[in-house]
Length: 305
Image (cartoon, rainbow, N blue to C red; front, side, top):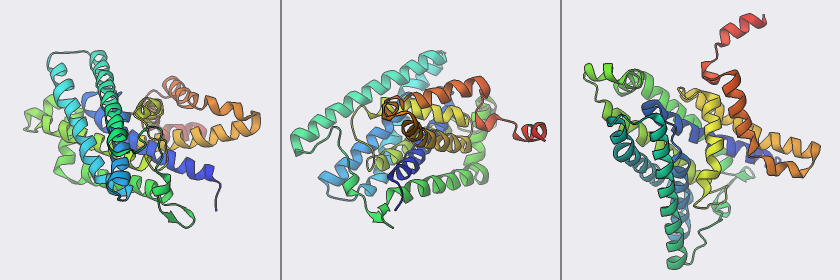
């Protein structure tokens, strides 16, 4: 047996890395921070609730369903809101506000869905947890193993796609210079749609897994978005590997760092845990604006030696 705080840290860091990967994939296309991203994960949370308590199946079966539905919601945001704004020459600020407005729509629909589930099925759909539906493996919740493995599988899959396939080459070309990519015959719009599908889908996967640890609620997205942005900023918005590193670093620090400080100075510090991602954002923007992935590590090694 290990201290539950370490299980919490592993799970939170892994899920945060998943969310950061998805946010980075969408940012690579439009260069606009998507404030609705964490609510894509909340959709996955509610799909897991329906799967486990209404369909009486394992919450893990919600993973592929969450990927598809959250991915399609993300594509809808790109196709019907961001793409028309881009065509009209809207600024990044306007597009960012549009993602925030879309987030409010998702939250409203999630609240409606929660009310419907309560009235129709008499199932608790606010501040609920599905921890009791998880399996045990080696005396620990199965999620402790599934979450990191999911990151590893996705990282390898994305690496193969980006480096070894024609689609990956086209995607890198489109994100680097969309105008030039179009001139050589690449369907940039299709590439962007697939990127948003993958980004939203990965958030959905994170949400389905999140349901087994966090309290599910329609307003979960706004609570998570500072940590997700902190992870992506720390990792560097232009790197999948940086997103993973940023998610793990911010996630572990947020859980274990808060626990350590609470042990040293008192439990009252736990209430200030939301400040951790904000501190990460400020420090990173001051010291390394391009994040971990943007640091010239070889130059730093020469300086230290």
